[in-house]
Amino acid sequence: MIRDVIRDMPIDDRPREKLIERGPENLSTSELLAILIGSGTPGVNALQLARHLLRFGVERLARQHVDRLAAVKGIGPAKAARIAASFELARRRRARKKEEFQLAAFAKKLVAKYGQRKQERMGAAILDGAHQIADVREIFAGTVNYTHVSTREIIEFAATNNAFALVLYHNHPSGRTTPSFEDVAFTKKANEALKLCDIELVDHIIVGGKTYTSMRCEQYF
Image (cartoon, rainbow, N blue to C red; front, side, top):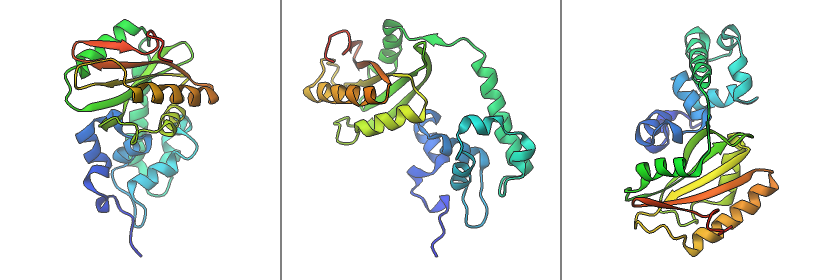
């Protein structure tokens, strides 16, 4: 039987290498947890252990007492302590005030980060029920031609991150921020799909050079 171990994965798919290459914001919750776990047990790798711990959701895991975590086969006291410590750090960080989504301020940050990028990137700001920014994550890096990014992925991304609303964004390396036909078609399709899940698409921002276009403000959807 072929053993499913992380070292047999392509390097780009290994959680630790993926984090170093792409940044922690582009890893799934199970991949981040797998890095904390570090190693698995015979026949069960760290990623599988992470998925097992997350089977009831990250919030329930965060509330688990360290002794109960340590009792899980393959975890033990040292790994349980690392997991508990990471959740406590996250709790302390959340104590700071959330930032409300404001188009001009948010777009300014996007322009600074992505305006001169030569590779296309697509991401999203995850908003809570009060339209405060809970997180900002990249979804895709490469050529955003919408054959690689589907509305299903956007819905899964929003649902996985418990989003009440999303602000999509991507950059145009050409520097021109006028939405293409594909940009408009994809945005309309994503908007309708998210509505079915009671998730609001607040905007889709296109960044290029030193400027941006708000597809919502320009009434493209």
